Image 1 (cartoon, rainbow, N blue to C red):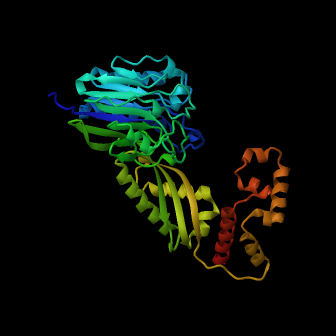
Image 2 (image 1 turned 135 degrees about the vertical axis):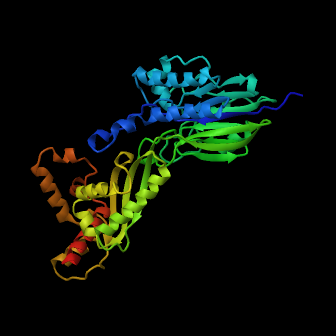
Image 3 (image 1 turned 180 degrees about the vertical axis):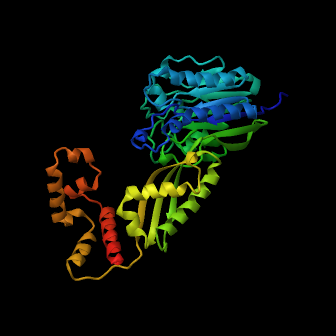
Length: 421
């Protein structure tokens, strides 16, 4: 009787090679070059892990590129990386995702021998006889694949390890378009041993019997893709998955840090708390560039100082952070001030008291004078409304749509100033 298949492979997805990173040039403090190069460095790290772990093959479940790019240097970078694997005898099997379907690069680029891009016309099966595995998958022919293409994947082949590549949102995930929808139950019933999924950028072990896995993307691209990113190393013994291990590959770590400022007596006390939090984040990042968004929350006597000039506050935070983290190892992407005055609300019967009561109203529509005043200011400067954009609080106020968070912020600032005397 022939021995049952035993092998190891890397499951990656959503490389988004050379993904455009918008807005970096607007912040002169941003390490734009390092962040732009992060996707290529993460791909290089994937190759290094594959070679170091001596895996038998690598599967990539879609979105090798990022949209309709025509710069062939992006494609050449991918080919060069895959060639390192194939020259070492490591096969690469991939499918196109929704971003690849848009890309001229994907349509015209020739992959190295030993690297296979599965068909867009129908599900294709590729047998790797030396490993006793058959890989099934179908690439996206267009961006908007809204059909359940997994329903057409072939039946499992007996005696082989059946591995499927699928670019899908499954039953849907926040922040991701519902491409190639399917259910976990459908995939589990299909009879395959491992579903290598892509499209969702957060790692998720959807099911373990059989294994259905989103590895997440190799490299976070913005603050909404925070935390460690990488690929999954899968070990198969005797035709059965015995281990699925995350391998961290990102070189830039996006991170949100919430600092509780409750009870902080002054700005220095707040800065000390920020330094502690940043030091902990830097330790967890293990030398990677930290791209941080700080959120300060809670009641503090420092609220007025922090809120008076947000640009100055950001500058002081960046300067203080150098005590905890080397300058080349971090970038503060933004600061969200959600602190509030430590002083209790003041009961007043004068004009200030009436203003505070008005600011407690849930919407600016209940503040007609504020809306009129905002419109008058905007009308005095032609083009200012368009320059500020629809999300600016002055524009929202003029349209009677100023959200309650801005009103609460104004009320808290006034209270803090009154508390200062």
